[in-house]
Image (cartoon, rainbow, N blue to C red; front, side, top):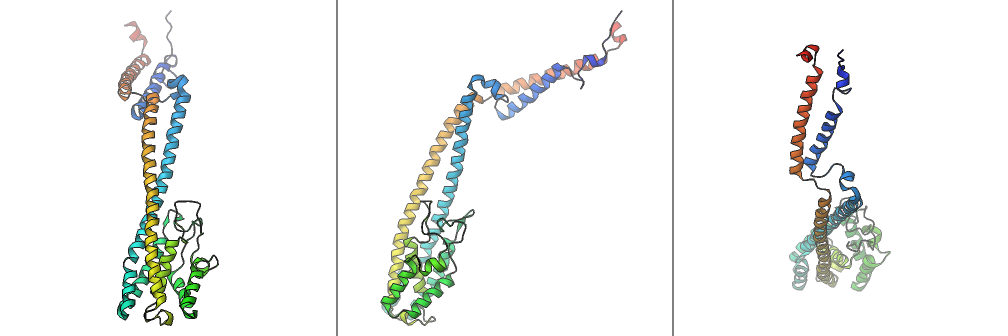
Length: 327
């Protein structure tokens, strides 16, 4: 007596034999490996070398994190350099123009230079209030706070000093206290940052070159006849001192920019070193984990052919009848 197996015994519950399931799983794995160029099951492929591969991957990940940090440093330094360049450009020529106007008692030239000094002061404040992401670059450690108040507030303070000063010496003394004393008006009313910064590459708003520039610009901005401040009128020695302060600040600013430039060069060198290190580590990691994509593609084609043949065979088995068997 002949015994025929029901269709469920020829195929799995999903209509596929275990062999077909295995082919499909291998097909899916090989398909991913063809795209990624890496073995899907690293543990099986590497066997006893898995720890070596994990250490290699960690080293590559660490380099990528260092690269991100370097990129942030690079961005901050670049923006700092550009801001200082704006300051340097805005004050270019102003000290010489004011000194020439004072020497010749040229009221028109002095008036124009005072006006341009006020404009340069506004540009300076705007440039120094710059931020990278959420960090204000010239605020020291108070990086989340805009470091500089308005130019009008500063000019109001300096105007008050000029009004109350009894002579040039008293004006100079009050001005020095205002800008350089820890309790002076600069720190109390204008600069909201800190005097120092934990980041050695940052430039706080109490930097000596910036104070000389801002001090000189503020006094020169108030020296026009429209202000009518006796101590700053005419061939004022206080204004001459302010012009010299601006010149000194320009010279110091060049040195500050040079220091920032050196930091930029160091960052670039570190980036290049990391790039070389990453290339070497990636090559070593690929030797351990890479799957030959040509080989994977060839295997993928073979698996597709095997799967097609298996489907055909399964279909024929499922359609067997007694008549087919007797033939």
